[in-house]
Image (cartoon, rainbow, N blue to C red; front, side, top):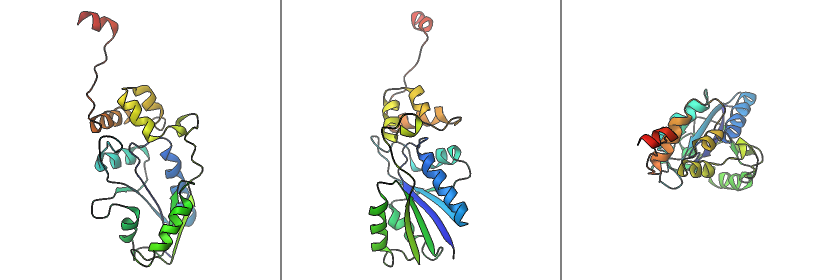
Length: 195
């Protein structure tokens, strides 16, 4: 039986907290001797989805090396349509989702299995508890990251990324650009006095 461990999300922008989902997908795939795939939405707007799908996938691949990411598209925009593309390639799909979405997603997948896609077995498991009030990097949501970008607070933004991520400055710039925020110049006090 060929198995896929699968997840779908916005991740706009990606955060250290998304690493929990990525880690769960990869660990489960290894345990099940399965392929893995994380699909990110193609949605883009300046308020909640500032990154283009291409930039988002590029940052995710650099942030979480060795992980298979792809973006959805206008023709196949949601996880149901994306699973339809995988029909015939896998017998079993294990979808990883936030603990607050497991039952909802299982009901949806059970309803559409045999209609929009066909798998012998399809299960949803939890990536773990979500705690938006958590202290530290795992509690920093994509919404908070967008707020840090809006406030031009690079230090807080960087704390929301995996430690050592070398693309933090580029991601910050890409998020600000996607939000159509002007680039602020930072001056030392002596530079300010010199004009």
